[in-house]
Image (cartoon, rainbow over all chains, first blue to last red; front, side, top):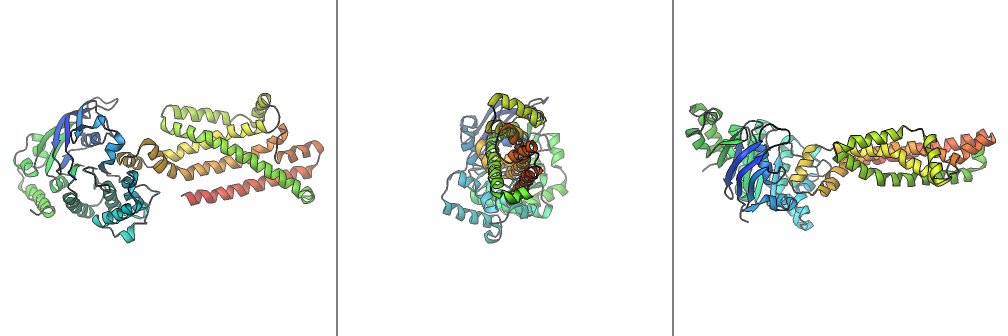
Length: 263
Length: 202
């Protein structure tokens, strides 16, 4: 299946009671299959921007298109079932087993039981969990890293053509995070799904992104490939964020990137 | 104990009627309380107001409420049935709200984000996890209802209250003791069963 294109056109959101727009006139074009990382500090609007794609947040002005279809005109349930969604808190359903969690979207879509069981096992293997050992476990019996692997498996279960990930690895320790990042790069390459990934971790952005979108106070500061961000920061803010001009950081970021993405 | 020994079938029949009264009232109460609780959990403004109103009703003395209900429905089954349904509302509704609010917000966010409709979020994610808390409410409400239901004997209703109030009128303490003991036994039994159910639902 062809990965979806995602396009923001003048997207603007203001939360009730807030003095400024959470996102302000954001325009951005994601090509099919691309991994775009939204990078910025807390409150810069990156999560809000991500959540406009599957309409968990609705726009006050502007448009968001998935495959040239205005999301505001698509049934929200149908829209969301076609888009993977993973979050920092994971949100595994506590009363369901690992297998039932992973199977949520396929079963909502009415897949055959046998097809679901087969898919669940394949996904658990894909995220590095032995199906026989994990299928029947409850979320309470998982470590943070294991839970997040299940969260990723659940997000991609129905082969979504677009994937939204909101700081999915923000709550796991550094070692586990590096392993999860490595696997995400592999999985996304295998799935060929368009991925929008939110983080405040510059290193993580450099590891995962085809392009990085630096955000600040609801606006885009710069959209660029990681290397370009280091070489030609568009604003003083970006320069400071990525430590442009500092050779130690440059080598650190680029090495992390090279580890995950051997050319 | 001698009355109980002499008339086991009469006591058993009244106990069965007592349990039936409480069971039917509980069922009716749940039919009202579950939708009310869902509404209250969803409505940040209306919810506290509704629970406050139900709490106020809960503080009305049961005899006073029964007196009013007898005016409305006459003697018999109806006034005590309605009184039980009304009293249970607070305990049940409150626990429906607590159960739904107790569900981790991240799970609800994930459920919506993955494409569950509002009713699917409720039925597949919120309700199963709220169930133990709801059963806890049912347990507390049932025990209270079993005790309040004895007042049915005073308004010409059914159940073990008949023994208690007849015993009072006839100066037969044995009847009072028999009725009270049977009501206690039912309460303890129901409490134990629902405790087990609560544990099983977790």
